[in-house]
Amino acid sequence: MFLWGTATAAYQIEGAVHEDGRGVSIWDTFAHEAGRTRDGHTGDVACDHYHRWREDVALMSGLGLNAYRFSIAWPRVQPAGSGAVNEKGLDFYDRLVDTLLAAGIQPVPTLFHWDLPQALQDRGGWMSRETAERFAEYAAVAARRLADRVPLWITLNEPFVHMAFGYAMGVHAPGQALMTDALPAAHHQLLGHGLAVRALRAAGARQVALTNNCTPVRAASADEADVKAADAYDALHNRLFNDPVLVGTYPDLSAYTAALDFLQDGDLETIAEPLDALGINYYHPTRIAAPTAEGLPFTDAGITGHPTTAFGWPVVPDGLRELLTGLRSRYGAALPPILITENGCSQDDVPTERGTVEDAERIAFLRGHIEAMRQAMAEGVDVRGYFVWSLLDNFEWAEGYHQRFGLVHVDFATQRRTPKASYAWLKEFLAGQNTDT
Ligand code: GBH
Image 1: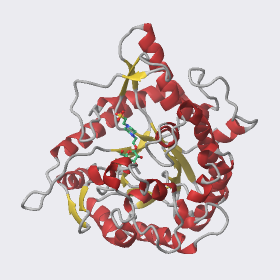
Image 2: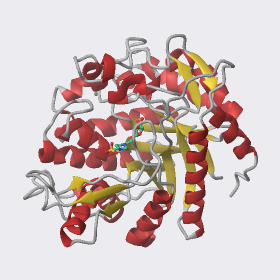
Image 3: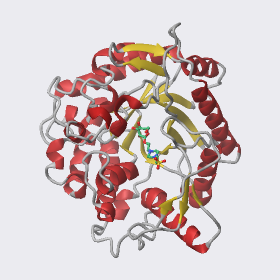
Image 4: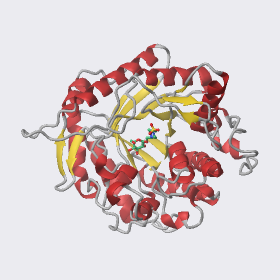
């Protein structure tokens, strides 16, 4: 069965940050620090999904989806990041899973979508090797409770973005600007992933995947310096997170570090634990030129000549085909089946006087990207699912509530949900699909 779904993440939608024994996460801390998010927005309430989840499942049911990718908040399950388990936190996901199943929707949980328990950050977060072990413990706790009903599990969401934005540039939690010294945060996430794969299988999970944010990298010109810079960027953004998982090696990182001091014997074997699927989040391609200043071995040259989203990201559907066929040629038989675990765009969606939301650009975006995915499939890439980011307008990290990615508009003052035109389009599209292929 091809999975057609939407995706969300706990901190972006749940709210209820002090309820039922939830612990503090790094995003609670970060969002409450002055100047970290646009207009000081936080996820304290977000979409209030923790209370309105039945309404949100009904919205999915109305779309005719057969899958839903959500994330489990580690601080709800283990408020201190290790040890004591908060049964009330698990109860929330237990109810959600049962309600999804009753609606014919396969639950696809992600265990880590950036909301690390603050207690673990206080001991170094992902810069500390210990966090990898704590993550595997937490994964086992969640799977022991839910794996009887949940076949497919995703360990991490976008370890690249968490490392780059959270630890290298400091624009996301935990707000550290370590630049290239942030590489251990990549390694420890990957190690945590590998340990979690084993823990999940031992606890009854039948299928396990990792979600990487990948971008096809294009050199700004054929000049050797640009080509070299593009290769260095591709190593950092894509291959650093795909190579060890799929083929058990790290790419050449000599442009970033003299030595992989964090690497211990056996780590690469753990990280390369076989997967049932690779999750790919695709937003846009990247164009890279030779560095113009000291520091990083590349500069982002920007993609021109394409429409852009409200975020300013270029809309390039063919980049998805390019990405998927590129993965297939790089990894060959080592590439597991692929799930597009996120794809979508932000637009300035404003309800009309009639109460509708006319998001024609989003419809064009989704149509174009689904078509590009199908072209890649026709070229031999084994894709098994596609998830729209996102079901609801939600807390868009450092942008707060200023970027709207939903198929459903949320008025954050009243929590009123209004399905957009893209919702109606997707519903009609899905009704015409044979989901068995
Ligand atoms: C995902 O990350 C997240 O998983 C999700 O939580 C989030 O809400 C969603 O996307 C939308 O942002 O053109 O230089 O500005 C996406 C990762 C990294 C993709 C930054 C776009 C823009 C780089 N993003 N990238 S730039």
